Image 1 (cartoon, rainbow, N blue to C red):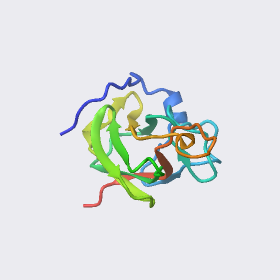
Image 2: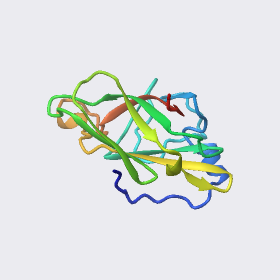
Image 3: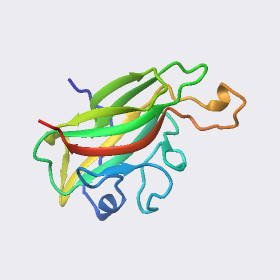
Image 4: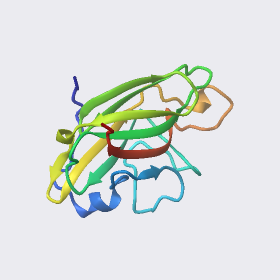
Length: 172
């Protein structure tokens, strides 16, 4: 059962979407961090990229996935992440929305890097003139400022550290 999140979705799939989407191909691993083409962006809710990773900055973070056509079958979107757990932050709750549909919830209580896997059905994609769009939004209510719990001067509100993402057809 999925629930709706009120997310503004563009009505037309424009060249901006195709040229600026974070992910635009199936079966390709997309790495986060410095070195990203400046014409690509993650959307709202992200800290400045670090060497091999990006942190969210705030309670929500978003990015777009654009494909040339509706996938033939269910896809699996995989995010490699590590949580911000420190004294005073025992876990990170993660809720994932795809085009406003709630597709998953995770409570991460261990510091180790882990995979978050989300099944995306073909009917969840928004058809546009020249392709399909998936607006991905992560709700991270336990994001916290390191400066609130230590001598750090870091004022970013961090929840998850993102290393990579892949979207591919789900194995049968």
